[in-house]
Length: 449
Image (cartoon, rainbow, N blue to C red):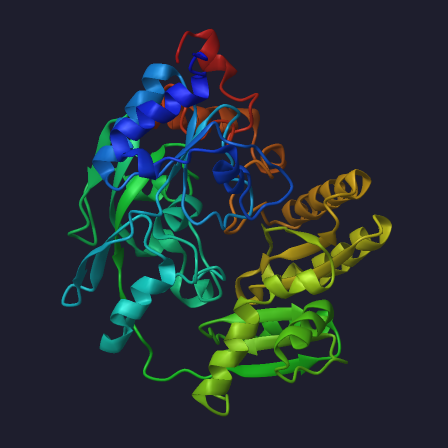
C-alpha cells in the first residue's frame, strides 16, 4: 500500500471537521483557488475547505496552528490585489457555505449576516422596505460581506455614504490562534478601543471574519442619473472638482474615458457617443426613466468585464489623489502608457479621487508583464507625490507590498507588524500581506513570535 502523502493526510483531517463533501479532493478542484481577480500572481493551495459555521472555522484554524500550516480566508475571489492568494503549502478556507442572513432589524436599521452572504443580496432583502446596504463595490453581484470587511470595500456611492467601516456595527472573528473575538453590534457608539476600525481593511491578516452586523441606510426619496459628455478627460476631471467645490455632493460621480466608452458600447449598445473623450455619470435626477437609469449603471458596474474584447488580461490599479490633481495625474498616466508601450484605460470614482487605471496586456508574455509592473509602480508613486496614497479600496495584498514604503516609514511599518502580531501571533493567518516582509525584524530579534 502506498504511504499517505502530507496533502492526503491534511485533507482527511479537514474532512473530519467539515465532512468529506466539503473538502476539495483533487488538484483540479483546487486549481480555481490559485488566483483571485488579481491575475499577476498565482499560487495553488495544498488544501481547500468549506466550513459551514464559526465553530468549524475555529477548528480548522486550531488544526492549522497545531500543524504550523499557513491559511487564508476566501469569499468570492473578487479581490483585486491578491489578498486571497494562499501561501505556498497553505489552506484556503472558503466561506461561501456561510451565506445565511441571520437577522434583519428595520426598527434599529441593522442586519446581521454570515461572512459568505453576497453584498447585493442584503440590499435585495430590504429594498422592499425602502432600505439598502450602502457600500456597493462594482463586484457587488458576487463579492461577499466578509471580503468587504477585509478590504474595507467602497464603491461608486462612497462619495456620499462612505466605505464599509462607516457601516460596520459588530462582527464575530476567529483570530489567528483560534480564539474567537465577538464584538456585539447592538449599539452605534460602543465603548473602548475602536476594534472594528482596525479590523476593517486588515485584509485577513488578523483573523477570519465569520459574521457581521451592519447598518442599513434609508433609500433616497428619488434618484436619477445624468450622463455628461466631454471632449477630453481633462475637461471632465476639472468639472468634477468644480462640482464638489460648489458644495454639491451627488450620491456618485463616476468617470469613463474613451477606451472604456468604446468597450462598453461594443458590449451593451447603450448609445454612448464614440467620439467622446470622457463621460461623467452623476446622480442628479435627470435620466429618462428607471429602466434607462438601471441600464446606465449596469454599463458602469460591468465595464471592466468588457475589456476582454480589447486584451486577454488587465491589471486594475487603485490609487487615491486629491480631486484637484486629477487632470495632472491622468496626463501622467497617459505618458506612462506611451513610454511602456501599453494601453491604459481609465474608469474611476472621480468624486472622491479614487483612480482605477486599467492596464491592458497579455499575461502569457513575460516581457509585457514586466512592463505592466513597472508602469503600475510609476502610477502609484505619482499618486503619493501629489498628496495621495497607494490604495483606496482594493487593498495592499501582494500587489502593493513594496509600495507601502512610498507612504510609510520603517517605524510605521514595524508598528503595523506589532499590531498584526497581537491578533495573529504565529503569523499563519494570511502571511506576507499588507506588511512588507522585511518589517517586524525587531520583534523576531527580541524573541517575539
